[in-house]
Image (tube, rainbow, N blue to C red):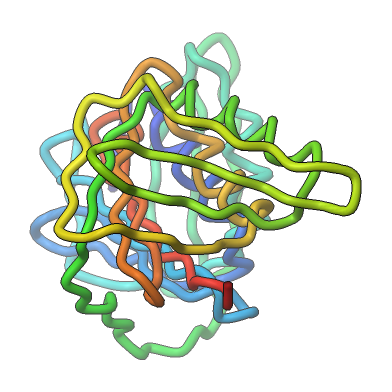
Length: 238
């Protein structure tokens, strides 16, 4: 049995995951809850973890369960800020209860998902940028005016974002940046739609960490409440 007096962070995490992953294994260990999967297009790897200490009750045997993430997200979206969330697992079902003024229960059938333990890529990144989430989201909205892809550049301690299309060009120098570290000049291209979905659930008032290397997947990480969300986004050919 798992219990959360306020399950808002888990609700946001599952919503973020469901943007890319239709089904996958949630793993419950003596350390906490984790989820790792690659989207069907093999473009994004999602890696999520929340320590068990952040649950009000964490009484569960080490286990992993295959879940339809899209359906789980639909259920969690019905939770209100006042609901206490209870989660239990049987041999065939994931059971969720919302308790506040109303008591509601849902049962989601478990599914068979490959047990393969996906490994995160090991990349020696050459640049890191910590940027305010709201600022980065707004820049990506600007980029969407012209392009379906975005070019990220790190040079001389500065972070630049560019987008080009048939109707025009957008160029921006990010200013709401707390740190920029780089070993060399970086220029890398990525899908704009995927990147916007990656950062959608990031808290606007907190920072996103972006790690880059030429001709390599980007690493994007940020906190959702007490949990940590990490994405690896495949690069595009410049």
